[in-house]
Length: 323
Ligand code: NAD
Image 1 (cartoon, protein in one colour):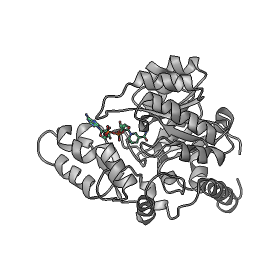
Image 2 (cartoon, rainbow, N blue to C red):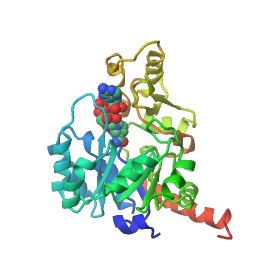
Image 3 (cartoon, rainbow, N blue to C red):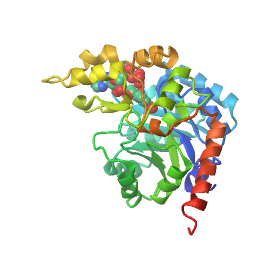
């Protein structure tokens, strides 16, 4: 399939595996790229910029196809040397970067000088317009359905995507809530040139997480996520479990919530060690989207991408036969 996204990024299918903290290692990213999509390494999952440089080199040994690197700019417990991560990416020879969170303007000159195409994730029209204005090559429109940080406007992609599409000229990815080919067809009808998926790729054989996490996604329905950090204006959608429910109860108390009250519960390293690696799905925060309700198997990445493309073709044939 050819779209503006496949042409721009040099990939076979318009399917991107978005950045996922503690999941986006070379094994998963290369599996997606080898299957014809775009795999993305998550920059901050590597403890230092030097480690990221090594992980990029490792990924390059595992695939000769394009892959990207995610750089997310959001509040963190440990200060992040963003300029050094950005420099490591620019010097690595990687040609695609996915930025997310805050405005990536300060990194654009360095990325452009290195010949990098920048995909910026946006949860609103105004951020999408800004991204295009500062020279981003692609906007990944992240609807309210998404895992992780959906922003504070709560607009799902059935409305956000066509609004952004009518305003922007750069290629668009539809992100958030997508797991199937028929959703890909719908997203393209609404103005997308491709799709971005995160949670769906966690439930694949190559995802470097405990089997209990993958099984939890298969078992979950679409109501199995909650929104934390509303009180901090840093809303994040995560799996509903003992720890996320405890966080919500602290946030519901009268008066201002202080992050220091939550830190021991919500730290990413606790989620990584207890849940993603340890398999105790109730004992830390882990990110998931409402798309969990659509996930009912744990295929390899190649089978998943094949199935999505076949489902898209079936959808066009069976449900939209006169198109
Ligand atoms: P972390 O352990 O530093 O923080 C855990 C959570 O608390 C994150 O949601 C973070 O945004 C939030 N947080 C931290 N300090 C805060 C503060 N002072 N006020 C309000 N909220 C605060 O996070 P991590 O697991 O090491 O992840 C590193 C970064 O990557 C975080 O910014 C996180 O939000 C982001 N992230 C990215 C992805 C992705 O797919 N790229 C997914 C999940 C998280």
